[in-house]
Length: 487
Image (cartoon, rainbow, N blue to C red):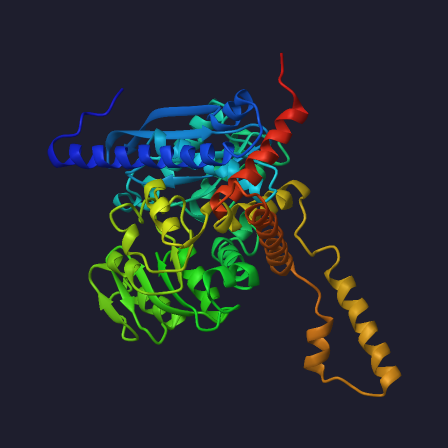
């Protein structure tokens, strides 16, 4: 059963969305081809890495307000060089096959670039989640999960979804519960999805992971003397002004950690406007205002600007687009004044715009590295579910006991005593969130060094995105070459 054709302005809007998603997919493939051209790999192997292996398009009925609504949805598995496939599920009216395939491809390259042993996947349901009640959303989510189960597009060793735009821990808990109802006797059933509430098998630190990972990525860049010299900036966050587009989970945490790290967040952009303060915005106060009023506009600690996206063009050192795709395009790229752009969202810069930005000397930090914090910590959650034990549970107290004995030995040898607070600070063992954040930090640091080693030492590579793709493609190619091709 197909949906009725759109009419009038709805048809034009649908066509515009479809065109944008097609451009997004073309941009991902353009970046791939640009990197592949610098590598000595066979055309056949590159084709296998580039193509999307499997796409499942479904239409299913759901009872909404006493009537039957046919819902369109997709799940794409871009690569099976590692299993399971991994990628979020988004709920939005913009969802279509091109968008899902583009995002699945990005997930493949993203996982590879940060050494997470998953293939790339992505899912989406074409709905506006704000138009449905909680009960209706649960019905849609559970029915979508059943469709995935029937076609073997979900499972701890097959395909593991996660939250994305329009979804969160609540939806992931519904998916896990539905899967468990069908997978009777499967001990690892909770690992069928990540981003769950902590009480349902989630991992501490997941909520802030993407924003925290972005902070670690930008911190590595501004503390890179070679890069800062190239961009004619001082090392460190001091004196660097940031503008963040998007104040959802990623944007809020990115702004929070950047401000705590020493940067000055001078602008925050949302769908209904922006707020600007050249002296810096109090991120926690802005978040409290948004939670109370439902919008960042009207915040007393900054000036409200109605045309929010115009703030993308304001003077700053670091610009963080953390909203949706194609926010920086050939129409506004020439007006961007930032020196560093760190992509918090997936595909916020079109390929046409990127060429303009690079010619202007702007350093673009690509999404496939910068916003990989979410999938890194999702990997940790999957490991936790597979191992059936909370991180830190086995060794936290032993570590604390060892540290206390070490402190007491030092006190005995020196004759000096620490205060109780000082002793507790030194002796404290790592809990789950400490270990998760430590693992994320190490991953972002090591991945930055790998990417920038290519950027600095490969004369064919002129930008960080190409360097990241080269790193990713090489790892995937080596995986396929090791596996061989089944006859």
